[in-house]
Amino acid sequence: MNQKPFIALDFPTWEQTSSFLELFPKGLNVKVGMELYLQNGPSIIEKLLQKDHRIFLDLKLHDIPNTVYSAMRGLAQYDLEFINVHAAGGKVMMEKALEGLQVGTAYNKRTKLIAVTQLTSTTETQMQTEQLISKTINESVLHYATLSKQAGLDGVVCSPHEASIIRENCGEEFLRVTPGIRLGEDEKGDQNRVATPKMAKALGSSHIVVGRSITKSTDPVRAYSQVLNEWEGME
Ligand code: C5P
Image (cartoon, rainbow, N blue to C red; front, side, top):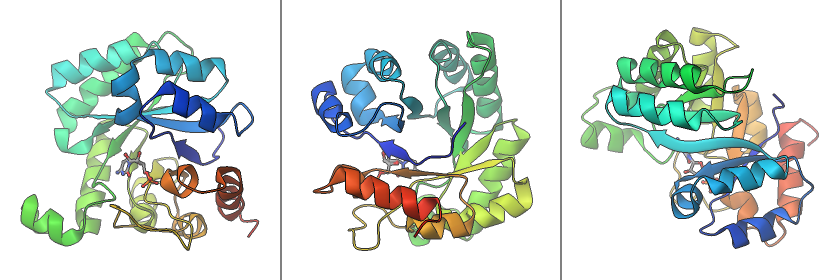
């Protein structure tokens, strides 16, 4: 798999998505999340695959193990790069997610399964007061990463700030996919644990996900190329 940044296609319609994508050559790494998938259905996946885009399907499944197993078995029919669950669903749920994906895989290559640790929009204070986790955010994220590794997953979604501690404890092969990426001058919006692409690289992210810094830019092609250059160490 190439390690180019994934662009978060957070658009409500296929029309908006395709007019955005027309600015770029085929074969991008893209992320499809709830906004696009839930309003347009699985046909969105087929349309993107036809244009040779590689997809991270970000549905963050979190349900009882049997339901997640069945959903993953169904979603395994698509040729996706990444798919995810919430680690908070527990080890058994993650094991069943992986099993569903293995059973349903119609290609030689199984989609990589990663688990969301703590959302990049969550602050340590929120985590402690709302989830009643009386640990640091690093401890909570590392705990979820360890649990995900024990369940056999390929990696986690975390912020760049936790990437190095996960790499140290879970190994280089265990992926650290990091949203919460902003170009220097951009607004954080609802994100809290943010970093630039250059910082993410230095901090040990294996992959980055970038949405609004590209999609809301007045010049998305220039913004993408800045993200790519920073990520690939050209700037
Ligand atoms: O616009 P922005 O770059 O903040 O978008 C980040 C994308 O990554 C969004 O689609 C969001 O749903 C997703 N995401 C995230 N934090 C996670 C997992 C996914 O921001 N922990």
